Length: 103
Image (cartoon, rainbow, N blue to C red; front, top):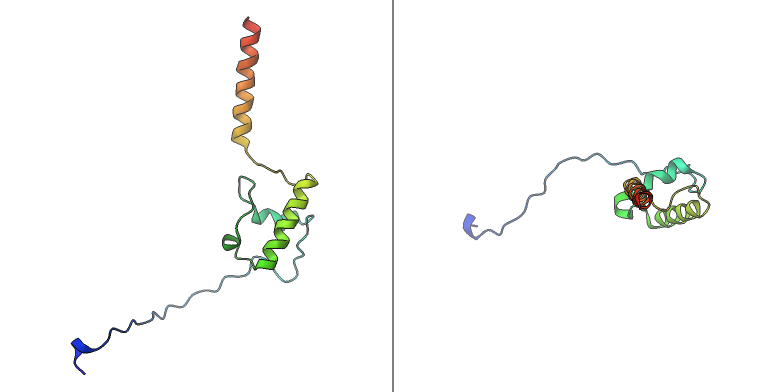
């Protein structure tokens, strides 16, 4: 067969990859009291990270979500973690109280 008439065959790269360890070990219990485990699946803003980011199975993600929500209801975790927003509110209350004192 002539080289020009030969169909193009894509060669697979033979790169080896290191298999990542699962984020939840088999002995870990997914529970609202296990704060060290739960805190790994929450962003800095306090949002629950997606399953794709966490590399969890569907069942594990559901259990993590339920545990996080239970911990929030029991005040073990904050619903929001906006420290910048808190600082901004604090500064506006200072200026508001300063304006009322001058009047």
